Image (cartoon, rainbow, N blue to C red; front, top):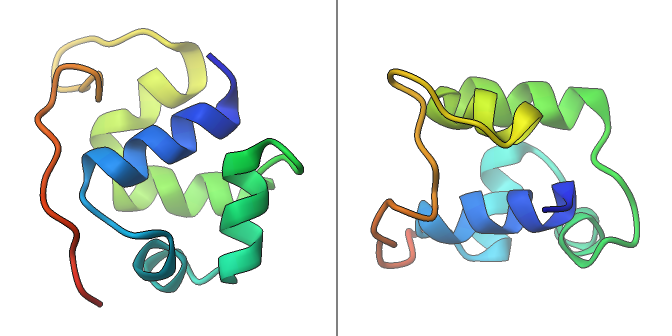
Length: 84
């Protein structure tokens, strides 16, 4: 799975719209759209913020594997969209 797909899956699994996710991550909406669309790669600052915000996905984001308290978003139920 591509990193762009993983970013989108984490966002959707956690119930955020692109707009609310961009606010949470401190990134512009266009940036999130470009990351999720595979038009640009998330930079290290974004990935660090993503892993700090959602530490349960860190191993999966970096390796595609899960262990212990790490969660695979495919098995976590999606939540309704959150408001900022």
